[in-house]
Image (cartoon, rainbow, N blue to C red; front, side):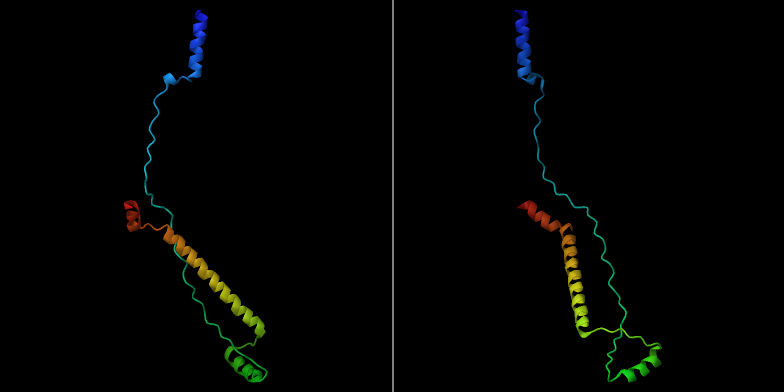
Amino acid sequence: MVRKSCLLILSLLLLSSCSYFREAEKEVVTVTEIVKPTIAIIDKPKSLKLDDINWYVVTKDNIEDFKSKFADKEGDLVFYAMSVRSYENLALNMAQIKEYIMKQNEIIIYYEEAVTWKEDIIDEEVLQ
């Protein structure tokens, strides 16, 4: 009989998972807190200061005159030739580079504004 009662008590303890000895569950509390981002904003690079470039248009009609004036003014005479179509391509490439840089600048400004702390906007959101 004692054996059966011990077995019964042991079974009850195992089935109840020792719930008698457990502490009461703690209440979960949710707290809403606004956290200011701590992302460092790096200074923008300095603007470019490009040097002037002189372009000379030389044709078969003015080449002799150009040679003499240029040699007196600059010294050695060196030609870099480019076709009209290549010059157009160069201008189009520069326009694409400028557009790409402007878009990248807009993206940088967007992220800088996204991580900037704005007291008045946050206060209005909390009040609503």
